[in-house]
Image (tube, rainbow, N blue to C red; front, side, top):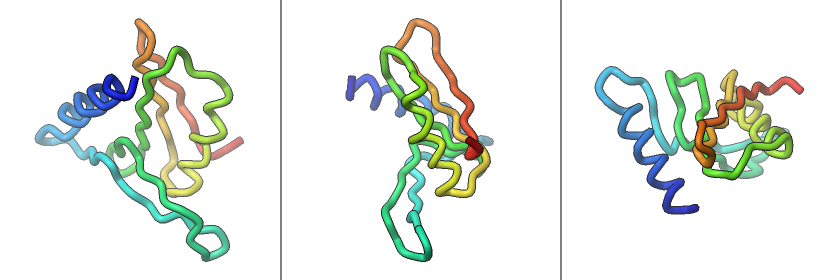
Amino acid sequence: MGSLRRSTRMSWRMRCESPGSATCSNVEWVVFYNDVIVGEYTADLVAEDQIILELKVAGALSDAHVPQYRDYPRATGKPLCLLINFGRPQVEIRRITAQA
C-alpha cells in the first residue's frame, strides 16, 4: 500500500500545485503544549492555507481514525481537515474539525 499512497499523493500534489492553485505539500508544524515543544506534524497537503488534506489508502475509514485527525486542526490552528481515502472503488471523504 505504501507505493500506492505515494503515487496518489504525488498525483494530488501535481494537480493541486498547478498554476493558480494555492496548495502546498508536506507542510510542517512544530507542536507545542504549555509552551513546550512536544513534537512535529507534517501534513500531506494544505489548501488555501486553511484546509488540511490527509490522504489515505485504506480498506475503509472508521471512527477510530477521527480522534487522531481531529488533533491536526487543534495543533495547527487550521479550521478543517479533510481525510480522503483512495483505498475503495469510490473515494471516501471525512470532514473533521477540532470540535468534539
